[in-house]
Each structure stands twice: as C-alpha cells, then as structure tokens.
Length: 331
Image (cartoon, rainbow, N blue to C red; front, top):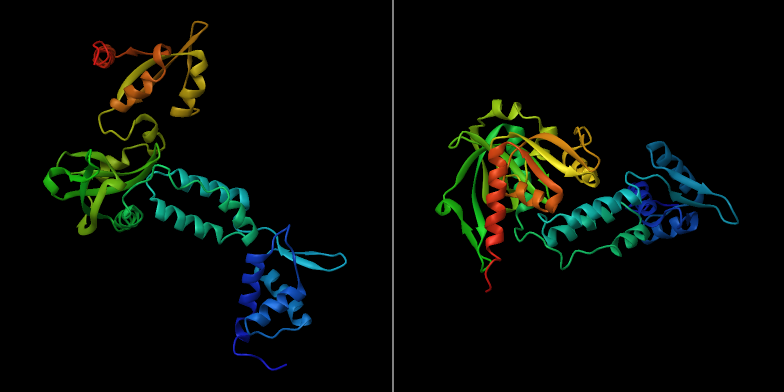
C-alpha cells in the first residue's frame, strides 16, 4: 500500500487518538483506529496497528487490551488520574487571585490531560462564573516575572494599588514605583503574596500579587538575603495572619477544648496543646500580631482568650470596646 504524505505522523496520530478517545469505560477497536487514521490521510493495516500499539507500550503508554467478542484497547494509567484533575480544577476555581478568564483557560488545558469522556465530567463540575475573582488579568504574568527575578537573583520594580469605593485603581505612593528584592511567593487565605526585602524600611514585607502593576525585573542584584535565610518558611505562614508584616512576639492563648482542631489546622500538628482544667487548653506561639490576628481570635467569641503578654491583652480589650462602640447608639 503506497504511503501518504502524513504517514510519518501515523504513530503520533494514533497516540493522540488513544489518549483523547479511550478510557476504561470507552475502549476502542482496531477498526476505529484505522478509520481515524484514514480520516487524517494516513493508510494503515491491522498488522501495522498491532506493531504500533506495541511500540507505544515500549514507549511507556499504558495500553490495556480487553478480549471479548471484539478485542478493544484503551489507555489505562495516565500522568494525571481523574481524581487528581478534579483536585487541581477545584484549586483553580477557588483561587481568587486567578481571573475568571484565566481560570477557564487553565481548566481547559487540564481537561486535555484526560480523555474527552472524563473531560466532560470535569466540565459538569465547573462553578467559575459569579465567584469572587481577581480583576487583574496580568496576575498570571506577574507570577512568571517574579519567579524569573528570583531565579536570576534580581530586584524588581512595580506599582502597587488599592481598589476605591467606585472600583477604580488608586496607586499608592502617588503612583511611584516600588523597588524590592523578591524571595518567595506564598499562597495564603486564597490570595497570592510576594515576600520581598524592602531596603527603604530594612525589612521583609508582603505584597498582594494581584495588586501589582507594571512589574519588571531590574539588572541590580537582590538585597536582604540574610534576613530571608533566617526565616523558617515551613512555619512562617502559620504565624503571620493575612500576610501583615511585623515583629513576632511570644503569645499565650487559652481555648475551649473543642477548638483543638481549629488550632491544629491553623498552626500545624506539631503545636503543643497544654490542658488547662477539664474544658480548656493553652498554647504558646511566636506570632506576628495584626488586625487579621484579632479578627481570627474574635471569631471564637468568649471561647478564646489572650493570656499574655499583658500589653496584648489590653490591646485586645481596646479593640473590642471600639467595635462595641459602633453599635451602642441607634443610627
């Protein structure tokens, strides 16, 4: 049989067809493979298909053969199983820092890693439209620019903004550029942050990646390496609330016993919980105290209490009184 112009692509076409069209619930026959190749302008005989299937097995593709009235084939184990793809899809959907447009684009790429039949199952689980998402379409490229600067040991510059009540950007520092030395990207509380050394303040600071604009790597090398290396990054995000910068301090807290799970979830399984009577326990932690810390603590109402240091207890009381004051008079 004469070879067509696409004959050299035969093995690639066959692999693509098996990956896209076959799975355990949807096996395909040799006749279907031949028909697909013919549609693409590639001639094939049954014997050559058997040889091609064996070549793909040797290459590493998990081709499973099922014998019955008709022998069928499908791709078994893949780089990503369906539950793994569902997990990744859920993570992307729930990420506020990824825009709706980029979310749909990324999920479409993930679907290409499954058969068309499993991809339909992923499609049915999409809940993107209407969710709270970033309005900054460039966040995806900001991450790439920051990662590149970190790998090249270079400082970056950018403009930083906040959203006004009329949903417009208002640049901080009057629109002047920030120049910092980036060291890490941290995903915390559904937001993406950059941890960077700011020479002006002489400290490590956090910046929301989706609030950065006009970002660019510079040729100047990074500063602040010693401060970053002194951090224990495995514990850093546990003791910093809402990525607010500040000096850590030793804080002793008391919780109702049934909140043990919430404390372990927040600070890790290695956190030492010390019994305090039959209904409470205490925990002593190195924390960066911020408004987000108080918001987290107040969420437990009277079942969580700061025991020390005394100055922090007083600050907690003052904040609570200020909040209560908002509701003491009728509007």
